[in-house]
Length: 129
Image (cartoon, rainbow, N blue to C red; front, top):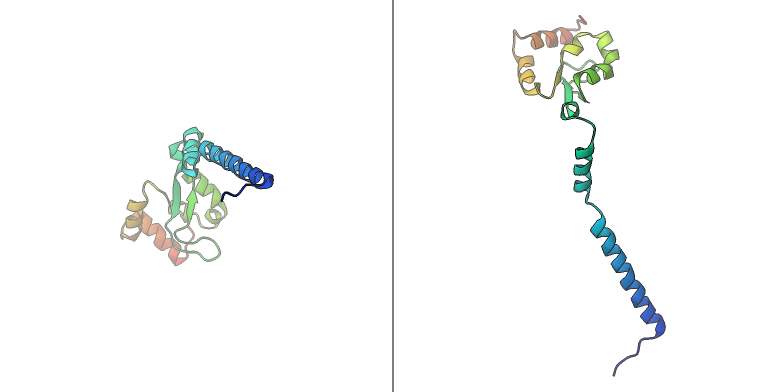
């Protein structure tokens, strides 16, 4: 025996079908987060040289700066951000390195007789200049 659908049930089925079609159209036209990010990178005004970062390789000075602190942007941006710390301890500026030289400079800080090592030891011993 066949069961007849009432008008209310038939209308509900039609509404559900229409809603499904609308959702499918929206998802087809929507971009994934990866695609949107890629579009942003292509149209961004920021150049590749400005997307870098800087790292402080000196010792931790309590209440002033922490060893390994990362600042986004160029070296000038990092020095501007650390201006109050650099004012108290000028050698901090010499121990801020860019992402391009980070690997080499981490070795230099640990190598005796190197300028970065001398700056590190002076700051660690409490000398500000």
